Image 1 (cartoon, rainbow, N blue to C red):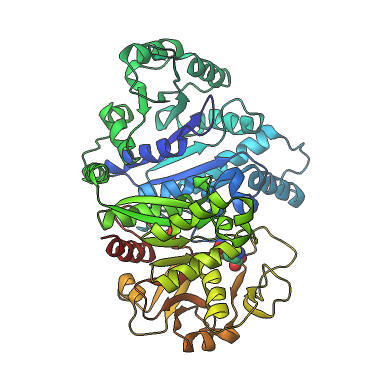
Image 2: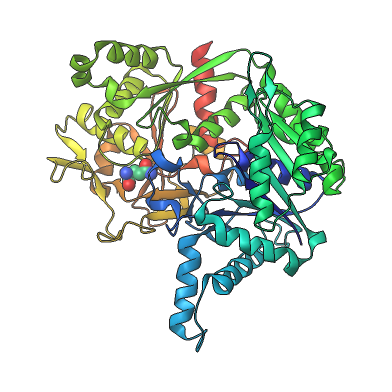
Length: 546
Ligand code: GLN
């Protein structure tokens, strides 16, 4: 087993996850089987209870793990399926050690960060690295370990220490340390500054880890002079200083690292497979797309696109498949509401203009009642104007509420998530969900959806098969008692769960594409393998665009 440890310095948001995933792509292109571990040094057990405002989207795995969005990068870049243990958090490691202490595993000993926590971290990484991830059932050959946060944080100290020790456990020849840092460009002549990186490497070396490779984020390619300076001050070979400068799309990142000789440094032959030539094709294709398609995203975290990262990626995968350049028009759902008009008529008008000009509408998942009425209006607009619509999880629920209110004339139809006792409960709390605990208690992970009809638009895109497996994350469902009435009016629940009761997919009759899914198809979309609900949306929206 080979390990690549990716740490970060200077500041967060440098694209450490993309760098780590890209290194994974290079290793994979040499024929190795890859897995990854993301370390998040916070005390939460998992990302499930964290706000997308703070940490971006919560990514969901097949096994129901609610994890950091970087795991999504790994799954997409490497086309693998990870499990909840691939995301290690301080919450998880302390719980494990404290549980062992209560069992008496350390009887007689004082339990301490060193060695008990640091040993537990190393054991965890080693165990997870050996779990098959690419569907072949084979143990991986290499594991990318990404350490969240920046070097020097108090929280990450036990992990750095564990990784320092780990090099002796696995052998120095089996582990590479990559440090991702920033090279800012200053002044009128655009001087590339190396000092922040020097400091951060000094800190890392002070903690006992000497990086083998430096990856430096900058706006433009790093000059040879800058690379040499960094090499001299950071005790790294000049060939091992890589520049990750701005590129038109992220598919260029593995190619950019390869062209600077990273495969040679990692001692792998990246031409053993045709993976990199596929990436090259993808990166260049994406750069040359000119015909546009406009998708309106009606959500509540529209200032922070990381909150919808996988949805954006899935839209891009589907747009590439239909050869269109994707434009996402972000619409803050509450701006569509009448009440917003008095607050800011400009924002209200802009939101409606964007919606009316869009070729397709997407309402993504969400929690809480802010912007709900705006999302309902967006669903109504898409239904009545025959604009292609995809509703994901909450997006399915709001479209159902809209249909009940405006087609079935059930005034006051609502979800019990937004109103305690609505006159007409169209969406209700699922009976099996905990009312006392919020962490890890939703209906989570991969579950089957069984087709209820022989033919429909969405089924034809999913291909043959009695059922489809997609990932879930919800507490509420369409009220099973009203499904018959809704179907009689034309909104057909074409996919249901294994009990035949719970709605998973609806499709509206006599509409180019009006689909709602209770699951989150965005977590399984891959470049080159777009997710069917997104593909259908983009196909219909492209037709609508031309
Ligand atoms: N809030 C809704 C529920 O819990 C929708 C969840 C979601 O969109 N992920 O059912």
